Image (cartoon, rainbow, N blue to C red; front, side):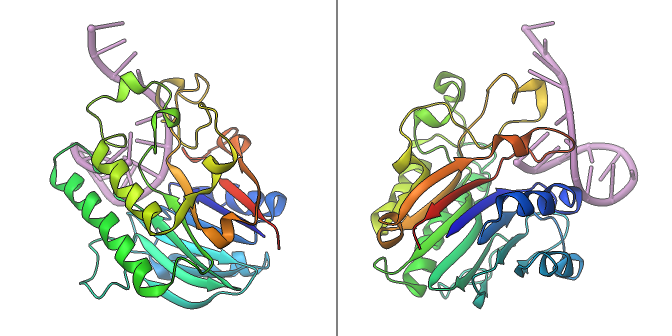
Length: 257
DNA sequence: ATGGTCGCGCAGCGA
């Protein structure tokens, strides 16, 4: 079973690249972030034609998350299931894909350390844990995949010195991620590949992609029953090349069926 | 030394 995640930075702008990628990568489940579409504008039929069941949670213009599955797509939950109020953005969608509970998440960026946006980011991550606690046991198959806007450790940024004082690398953000891992989730890519220097996001500016100035912030966090089935993981850097790419590359994991 | 690109939507902001 292949599970993938991709921040597409506008699905409308990526409707050449995403179907093309689906046809050659053939994930069983794809988690999309930053669709920037309303639900009415989401191209359901284009994905159905490729053999995927789609579900979308959007608001238009900003944010927007989706799930595409060819292993079943049931019990769709948009937003948090933690019993709290509605989130201020369309940032999480969850569904059962076959026997696996899958969430596509777009964690708030945070903008600057200490800002209201940064506090929202930390609160959002606490709600994500409560959401999982409400829906699943860590002993069941769970995959939480998306753009976390956090580099889990210094191996995940091109130059740790360049990030001192910035968001994405603070102890508070990394602790919030550790809280999810404490619940029972494993960073699947990192569990298979230890060395520094493989990234999933590169700023469009200043040739950052070609200069290898990136960050690994797109993560697939899986519960232990899934971690035990892990066979392979890949960042598809080719999808960051060529005509009109997203600033993120897709990442996928392969699980023994 | 500075700013460098996209996408949104039509100015300038967010990433």
